[in-house]
Length: 76
Image (cartoon, rainbow, N blue to C red; front, side, top):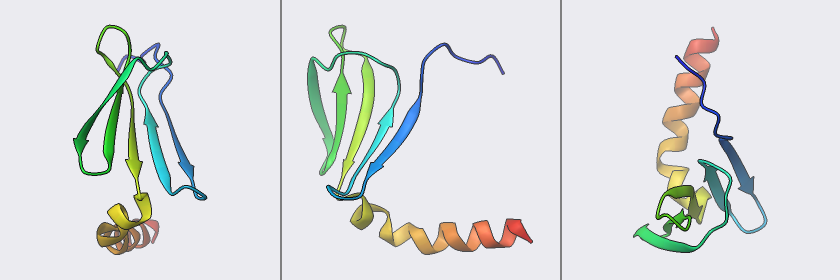
């Protein structure tokens, strides 16, 4: 698979409980709420540069146990 020149990253801010998925670097020109508490940040061309998940711990709580169990089973 060819590596992209884009700098992708993930950041979690525990104090504000926001999970950020960066797709590419750039200046945010606007944002669109794509679901309650999930915001897509767009650049000047309307391309997604990142996605914010507000109240991330609440959003991921229902799937956290499943992820933990999968991780434990593959570590064995």
